Image (cartoon, rainbow, N blue to C red; front, top):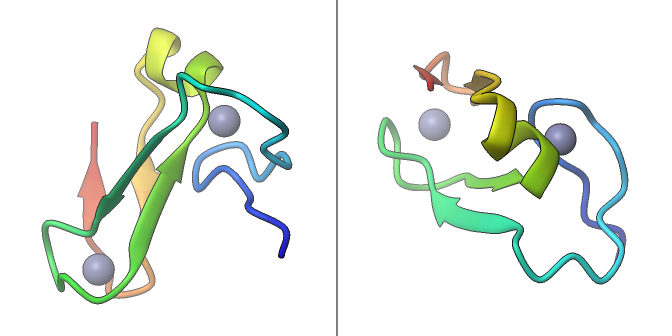
Length: 53
Ligand SMILES: [Zn+2]
Ligand SMILES: [Zn+2]
């Protein structure tokens, strides 16, 4: 299964600093953010329309 960063859409490969958490908006989708996007505080957007920092 390929995991992609929710912000930059890059594939996550053995990145231990990747953040994975359920969407605070709907709680159904899983938000994945790579360490790069976390560092730069790039926003993510869930399918439900929730946008987070
Ligand atoms: Zn990313
Ligand atoms: Zn959501």
